[in-house]
Image (cartoon, rainbow, N blue to C red):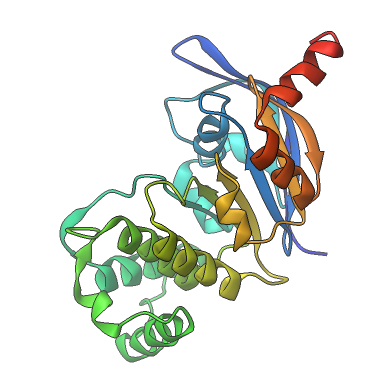
Length: 258
C-alpha cells in the first residue's frame, strides 16, 4: 500500500478572509485526480496550503501525508517527504542553470537523509539527468540554460516536469499547469506527466479547463465551488463540465439547500 495524502475538513483563510470551507480529499500513490472549478473557487489556495505557503492560514482541519500531519512541517520538509508542486507561474532564476538547481535539490534531500552525505557524484547526476531528459524527449542542452530565464511558457512547464522526474515525489500537485500553453506545448507537458505516472506517483491535476484532461486521463474528477468539493466522479464529470459549464453544479447545490 502506497502513501496517501489525506485532506480532512480543511478550512483556510487569507488575510482573515475564509477561502476553503471544509475540503475533504484523499489522493493515493498510483492515482490521478483532477480538481476542477471556476476562477476564485479555491483551487490554488488548496495547492499552496498543501505545500505550506505562509500566506495561507489553516483555521481548522488536517493534512495527513503518509501518516504525518503536514501542518507541523515547513515547505522544505514536506518536499523531502515526497510532496511536489508544479507552479502555475514558475519563477525565473537568472545565473542558476537547470542542472545546478536540480543537483542542489537532490543533494539537499540526500543531506537530510544522511548528514554525512557528500551528495550525488557529478557523473551519476549527469547520467540521471540525461536519462530523465530522454524519457521526457527533451534536448540535453536544456540543462545548461538558466532556470526559466527567457523560457517560453511551454519550456517553463517542461522544466517543472523535469524537476518532478528528477526528485521522484510520491504525490505531485500540478497547479493549473495548462495555464498559458498552446495546444502543442500542452500535449508535450501532458506526455511528460504520463511517462512519469505509475504505481509510485500520485497526481493531483488542478485545472479550470477540461482540455488538459484530453491528454492526462484521471481516474477521479472533483469539482470545487466556493471553497468546498461539491461533486466527485469519473472522467465523464469533466466532459459534462466542458459541455454544460458549472451552472448545473450550482443549481444542484442550491437545490440541496446550500
